[in-house]
Image (cartoon, rainbow, N blue to C red; front, side, top):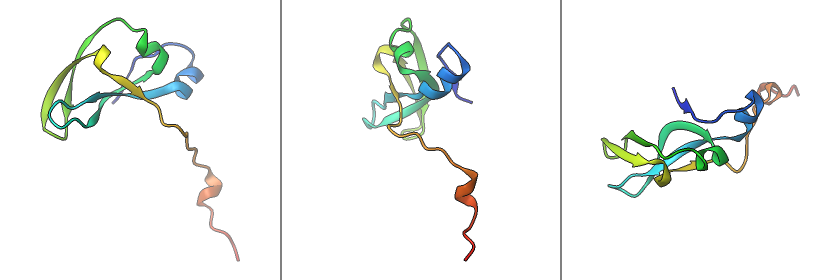
Length: 89
């Protein structure tokens, strides 16, 4: 289960949450830390240290908050029930 770092109203968390990412030191690829956070609140959070298991190189990576960023998708997709109803000819 992903950890959530933001505080605020239920609706503001749902609309502004992104995935906290770090760079794998072995491969240079971006990996998810398994945490979700609001970008602005994450930037202003106190300095903290964490560990994340990397599925790419199969190792634990240690990182500080200043080395991480919040990835928020540019577009938010919503699935509607109507999208799953086949058209009748």
